[in-house]
Structure formats: structure tokens, C-alpha cells
Amino acid sequence: FLPVYDNLARALAQPTTDEAYAKGVEMIMTQFVINLRYSLMAVSLTQKLDNSFNTLQRMIVSFGITDEIYAVAISQPDKLTASYMRGLILTPVIGWTGGTLLGAVAGQSLPTVVSDALGIMLYGMFIAIIIPPCKKNHNIIWVILMAAGISTIVVNPINGTEYTLNINPKAETD
Figure 1 (cartoon, rainbow, N blue to C red):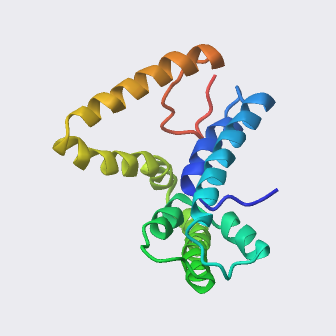
Figure 2: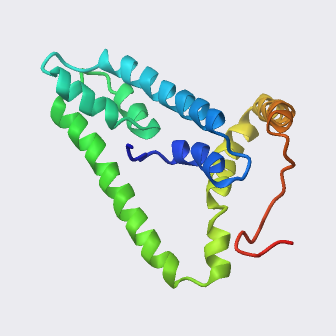
């Protein structure tokens, strides 16, 4: 068992662990695709590391890769040093871990309605990220709509489920 520090990976894995339709093969394939993505990022990033990295240091760097860390590291024009990568990996990990702790503590003191509303914040953040590029290039909205349509067509028959929006997951259903 390894902890997942990346929000996207956690969001992708979350529905398969929380929903009743989760099957072992589905979970294995989902984790395989997520891990394959990070493996490809790690391989491409090794080309940017300076020659002072030994095998253990390369393994540690590959464990610390997230989308954000990869984007910052790969955009650097120079070779990456061990101290740069340590700082680049540790800073967000400390922030994410501290934020998770703070969120858990704060979540216990918030009213249920506020806590439930914050549960959809990740979707709101995603929409906030895609709206500005859609305003500049209208082709992006068509790509998003086609991806959503294809996903709906492919995923629903495979899972054999209907998707419903449950605003209050704590409410009991008959």
C-alpha cells in the first residue's frame, strides 16, 4: 500500500472504491492506467535529471511525481538537481498533508450542509479551469462534449448502472 498524494489520481480512484458497482478487475485496471501514467511521466523526467542522481534518488523522485510537480520540473530549461527535486516534491507534499489534516479537523466543525456542499468543489474547480480556454477557442467545448458523450456511451453499458446526482450522500434512501 502506497499513499496517493495526487488529487486527480485520488478523484479517479474514488468512485471505484465508494460505489457498489466496483469490481476487482475494474479497480485493478483503473490503478494500472493511473500508475502507467505516472510511470511515463517518471521516464520522461529522468531525461532532465543531472548525472549526480543515483538509482535510489531516481526511485525517490519517481515516487514523488504528481501532475503539478511534473509540469513544473519538465518546464525547467536546465538539468534538475537533487536539491531542486527534493524541494519541489517536499513543499507540495507538506502542503497537501497539512491541508488534509486541517480539512479533516475543520470538516468536523462545519455544519453538515456546508461539508456536503464542499464535496462537489473539485468539480467546480475543474469547470473553472476549462471555461477560460473554451472562451478563447470554441473547439475545446466540442472536444469536451464529445469526450463526455463517448464516456457516457462506453461507461454506462460496461458498468450497467444509472448515474444519479446524490446531493446529500448521508441521507438514507429506500
